[in-house]
Length: 503
Image (cartoon, rainbow, N blue to C red; front, top):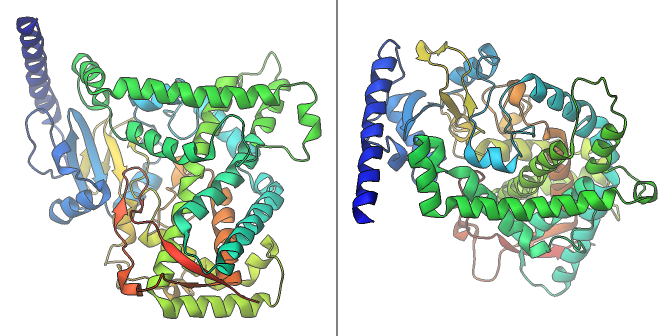
């Protein structure tokens, strides 16, 4: 058995060394971006570190804003400037708008039947069209206004109970439950706290498990035989299959509930599953694109895994920055309360009255994008960035975190200064490449309107109804701003604050 294993590993090593030689010869005709020194076999994987966006930023400071790395045998070009990002996302958008065919995303998206991770194709364009026109349209987002208002009001009620006891609350959990409760009703038509198919305490664990399998699979970076062997030996394949079964069972149960006779006539709004099931019902035999149950699962998975924690993360960072900057907190709260006046409940109509809140959110998105590294793209054809060749098949990794802190475009880039956006046209909707929390171009996140609506209303309720104190013995200097995570990056130490209810 030992001899067989050694023979197998020796054969794999021979294959790897052969592939290295082939890739070097093939790549010699290109003017490739500068690159740090690589280790045999693993390339630059060892340089990613625990917080990849920071590690890559440090490398780009040395090797430039267009930098070539090797993750195993996969070439990855890291983009760390707005100018280079504009070339990728605008000038060469069509040539760079595909996605890598990763092992985990292939499995979890049911063969790329989703919006976020599907490679560029005609079928993806059809699904994207449906998402923009019917699932994430402004009209659809506005139809969920009452849900956001009701769940935000419930959050205020619960925080008020803590305020009456002068007890600290874990804002990380509070805001995660707010976004979860909104997304459960919007997507699944279910009460988050009463779901019979998913325990509320399991949802947050699922988020972290999904990110873990999305982050790294040996098969994505090493030749097929070795990669599959390493996935199996490391337990990655088992974890992926287990996660898939759990998620798929949950989605199927919810869809089956929606298919019960009479169910869709008893609910007073159309959730996302309702909308997509109606589309299936209305399909004709001659329609080119056929929506299926697998497409529904792919889309609701995008909404579920990307829509819950990202909105909560932005609100957590915003509150942490405001607590570290009490002058900015007081100014924002004074303006909000002055503009809105005396009210028992907040509604979304109040959002137009508080421009200062939008400044706070923009500055938070600049400093703390929930996903600091955008979902990787893959080059479909040869093109150049900043004079460097980008061969087909190269992954393109845009570091939105580094771009948002570029001192060439942002004065005092590491400081929280919402006022910098007064009379500043830079926005987060994909047209300005200095600020890219949601991406840009064909692959921009289609859920931006839904995310922003949740973030704005949630933060407005927190800042209008409550003053906030640190637990006894703490000052703003004691607030730990350390990050944790890979795909999404959250405040590592939960933000615990004491709410003081006004009025």
